[in-house]
Amino acid sequence: MSVAEYKWLDEKKPVSRPRAADARRASHERDLLSRIRTRDVCSVARQLATLLRAGMPLVPALSALVEQLRTGGARENPLAVIMEDIARDVNSGSTLAGAMGKHSRVFPNLVVKMVAAGETSGTLEQVLLRVAEILEARVQLASKVKAAVAYPLMMVIVAVGVVVFLMYVVVPSITEIFIEMDRALPWPTKLLISISAFLKTYLLFIVIGLCLAVLTLGAAYKTAAGRMLADRAKLKLPLFGGLFLKLEVARLSRTLGILLASGIPILNALEISKQVIQNRVIARGLGTVKDKVGKGDAIASAIRKTGLFPPIVYHIVTTGQMSGNLEEGLTNIADMYDGEVELATKTLTSLLEPVILLVMGAVVAFIVMAVLLPITDINQAL
Image (cartoon, rainbow, N blue to C red; front, side, top):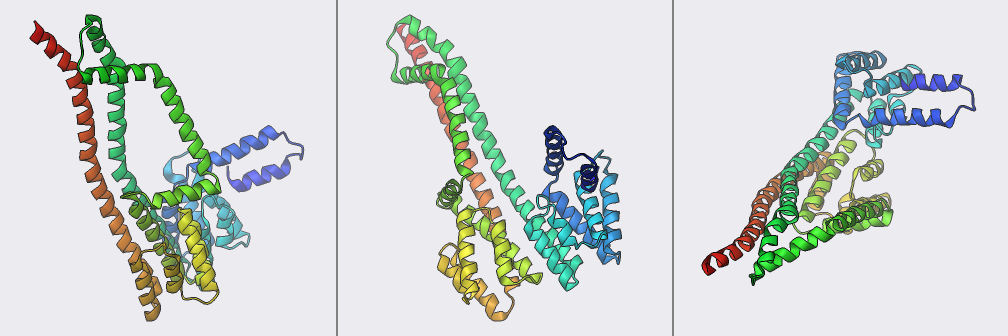
């Protein structure tokens, strides 16, 4: 059932309908939207651009796209529901950007503004291709970073699980024998017994404390002050701080370059790009850049005054302004930092893996040594 059909049903229902029905409907729509991925939006933008480039009018192209989305075999394709509603709005006289703007959870402000610019300039198919490119680049970069971090993170989880299992289950049963023998134990064995006893007694409290800490930090992160503090701390982290900065600069440069290439004015492009940035410190710095540009400063000078961006960004933007090709300069910055982020991620991963293995090996070796030392002493005494 489409969103338009939901609206029609709402008009037919009495005003005093139960709140439970509203809650079920809202929950159903949230469930539909939660299943729409950025990759799906990329595919829709690219397919719609292809249909328009083939000479098909907009409304028939949207209808063809809806039909294509419904051929996947799914009982209710959530994106097909949204696109069908957009097709009806456009057929009723709305612009494509206006129809997309009603579904802001699927099509962000960046996409809506670019589509509006494409409709105004008559280059909608080119703009849709740019939308697909910018979303695909964002997804690919995020996927590479996640894939590179996933393996070391899994190693850490497994290592911690193995050590906790050894200390909580295996070690107590072994060390209990040593305690019953009432012999002097080496200090590694005493330390091992103390750690094992501590975990045996307080493991539940430790787990509860960690869960409460995670929930507290999560709640604090949702506040404006907490988000700003966390984002500022991210940029100052050793090793990872530079990676986070490059990731945001790449995202900002690519977005701003494509917006300017789509014909969107510089101030509007800066405002839209600000909404794309995930780090609030850099987003606030970009807001300062927008204010200075609005007062007549050159964008390169405004970027330099923030002190947030690497010097090479300022110099490339300056060169782009002087040559009248700022969009290409911003794209070059994005390509450069995309490559650096990918390389830095691989380097950190290659460094973390042996470090994790060494730490885990050292912990296991200590446990083995602490268990074997009393056995060796007993054998020598015999």
